Amino acid sequence: MKTLWTPWRIDHVLKNVVNGGGCIFEPAGNASHAKEDLLLYRDRDCVVLLNRFPYANGHLLVAPARHISCITELSSDENLQVMKMVGQSTAILKKHLNPDGFNIGCNLGAIAGAGIADHLHFHVVPRWTGDHNFITVVSEVRTIPEHIETTFDRLIPDFISLYTNNAQ
Image (cartoon, rainbow, N blue to C red; front, side, top):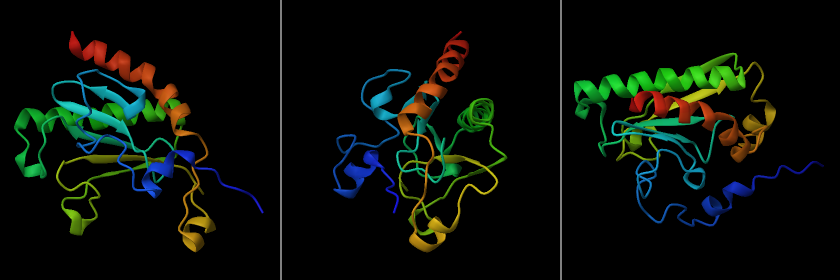
């Protein structure tokens, strides 16, 4: 028997609140990035986080900075900036993780599958041929081949560069 270690999930399993009860898309402070929050990028328009409970390695969440629940509430500028960030995030994942494809989308409302229904966000999920095997189907367990902090360290230099370029 092999053991699958996922220590970052213990807070979720024990129902501890990782971020102090606030919205995960609105981490405290105003830092452009913060490893403890898995915050890769934040500016006045957008937030990019690594998903703490990913479907696949490198699973990102891209959200408007403003706390809204529906895509219809985005201003034209917010819509442009969020979609631009989805594209830039996809490019960074391609560069560092070399996936065979992506699932990109959002779920509007709890009934549609949104785990956090009150803050609009998009999922950017890298996919590889054969990335999910029998264990997902039989045991409802996902296997993530790289520790989330290693993935953060791999991606953060490009998001810092992106932030610096966008701030100019």
